[in-house]
Length: 287
Ligand SMILES: [Zn+2]
Image 1 (cartoon, helix red, strand yellow):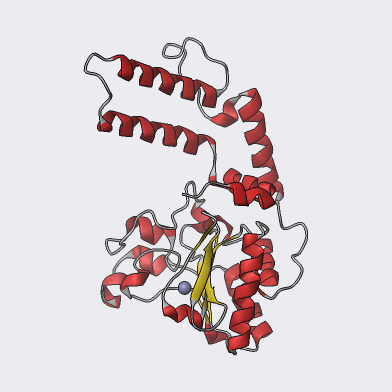
Image 2: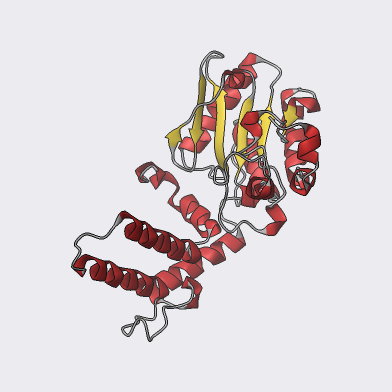
């Protein structure tokens, strides 16, 4: 466990911030519960459990020598404006009944597919057992027993400066009707339209096409071109006299495929698509 002196020596620790939108959300949540402001917190302490994950900024996770996972809760293509923000929050309600009500409200909203802004939460339904929901994998989640008296939640990192998203989470946790219009933002809608256009009609929004000298049969659609190119590489590997391709060769191909898809499908497009699919989310394969 690093000391605060060690942590403070790194710029990423010192740069960690709680966005004004998160602070406003925390103040409103405490006021609604009649709890003191100190019952809401975001920046994790120096405990080993906080050397990774949502109580740290993405910049700290990617750079600090003390970080224990460079991938956990990391979002692809995160805008630099969100890089130093802490996306997770803990709220200790005033009463056990409030704690149980918050947990049920979080459960209802996330399972219905109507609150993709909240990527994970842990709480309790009975004050004894910890329950929760991983809203990215759509799977049950659990954590340590401290979550029988405080609720842990995390907003998507790219939304840490998005007031509408926080107001939607606030309404959901308090069991109020969700504010309308917060579902798909104008910029998300543009991303979605561009992704659709690119997928079905081709075009530069799907990334740079494979050069013609490598792919003589370009369809004009970068994703299709990349997939066809990778497929030809697999066929070449299969045809080699030594037989089946090695694990290393397959892993390298897998990496390139992931890279190609990640380049084409921005995290924001994925979030918008998830939101549009909404109720169909139960059909999303886990993992
Ligand atoms: Zn927490």
